[in-house]
Image 1 (cartoon, rainbow, N blue to C red):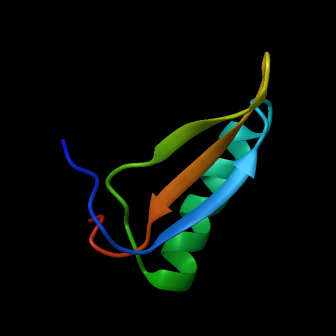
Image 2 (cartoon, rainbow, N blue to C red):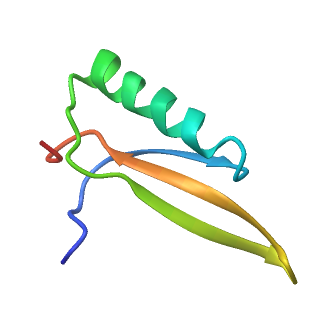
Length: 64
């Protein structure tokens, strides 16, 4: 599978905030851009030994 090129909404968050962050970005993509993304990327961002956060990315074009 290839990740499509284009514009994405991105937000960094903790594991505890991840679900709320996905919901917030999906709502923003739909209300502000009229996008109905068919996928969400969740990336682990390593900040140090045993220390990481997440980055949620949602396409706002070409994702439907």
